[in-house]
Structure formats: structure tokens, C-alpha cells
Length: 275
Picture 1 (cartoon, helix red, strand yellow):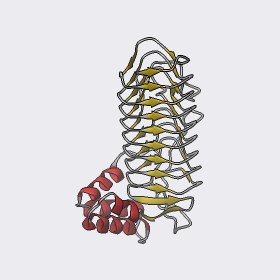
Picture 2 (cartoon, rainbow, N blue to C red):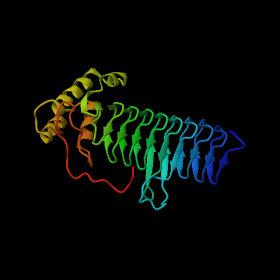
Picture 3 (cartoon, rainbow, N blue to C red):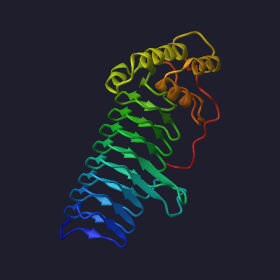
Picture 4 (cartoon, rainbow, N blue to C red):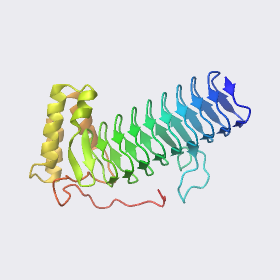
């Protein structure tokens, strides 16, 4: 294990012997870091962080620090980072805000410079967040999704797997799995992403049919959702059905081809968090 002489390491810290700790790194108490992880100069690893193997934390990234929640009372909580995940310069992820809660970032994610993951978020595996992308508190982000630069996601929103969010977009509501989203709304299926992910032809055809029924046909929203859930049979389709039937605090995003949302559901309240 290589630990630079200027690094500050707290108590009850478990570092695999292969961890590389650079100059001016700070590791607070009660932290676990797995094999092969590299901590670059000046990064900050806060109390309650559980980090897997082969991660890379670049200069000035902050992992597991206090949540930006005005209601946080200092209760103990955790941050979990999966194997192979990279945080680039200045990226931040904050720990859970309630006692015993957690913020989770999955395996092989790539979080680019100055991106932000707020308290109690759950980020799936192989997610990409470009520079200055922002997740507010309690966001759920599906595996293999891509959040483009300078985009922001409202607290409690859910974004399904393999969805793609365009640059500079504000996401206020849930974006179904496999869809593309701009400031105008849901614009279509992430066709290239589905092919790269290895989805079968039958799965891609079924997802395109689901998109047309949800967003392009003149069908009442609840009826469209019910019909889509009934028609989905492939493995990817069943995952989309699971997303559509899961509880939601924000409601589904609107079509980008319609002036008014077909899926706005009232009653989505903001909490006291400033994120």
C-alpha cells in the first residue's frame, strides 16, 4: 500500500493493502476501501463511506460528505460505491440524510467533473454522468443510463435503465426505461443505446411499440399505460412494465411532441431539502 506522507487518515479505517493514497488526501473515520482503488491528490472521503475495488477518485472529488438538507440533524448514515466506479475532478456524492439511510452508486459508473449526486440517491450500474450533471435528493437512476452535461434531475424523480438525457435538460418527472428525453419531453427510444447494450430485435421492437402507445397515440394516459403493461412480454419489456407500475412521486414525463403533458399527476410535493 502506498500512502503519501501528507495524507490524513482517521480511525477505524479499513484500506486494502493495494489501495494507493495520494498527497493531501483526507479519509475520515469509519471508512472502508477495497483493493486496487486509487485516491488522487486532494480528494476527500467522509465518514460512513463503503467503497469497492478498482475505483478511482480524482483530485478534489468529495465522497460521502454531509447532505445538503436543512433538516439533517447529524444522524449517522452511509455512502456505498460499487467496484470500478470513477469520480472525476470535483465530483460530489453525499451520504443519506436520515438515520441509517444510504446513498448508493453502483458498479463501473463514470461520474465526470463537477457532477453531483445528492443524499439518498440510488444510481445503478454502468451509469454515465457528464460534466456538471446534477441529481437532487432521492433520485433513482437506472443502470446504463446517460445524463448529459449541465442537466439537472428534480428530487424524487425516477429515470429508468438505458435512458438518455440530453445536455442542459431539467428533468422534473419520471423518464421511462429505454427512452430519450430533452427539455421538450420524451422524444423517442434510445435506439443506439439498446443496440449497444445487446437487446434482441424482439425486445427493441416491443419497446418501440410501447413508446408509440404511450406517447404518440391518442389514448388516455392511464389506459395507455395499462395496455402497454399487458402487451410487454420480452425480458426488457417486463423491466419497462415494472418501471411503469412502480410507485411514483413525480408522475411520468410528457411527450416531446405534445404541448400539454399526458402524464402530469398532481400532488408531488417538495421536501425541505435545498437540493
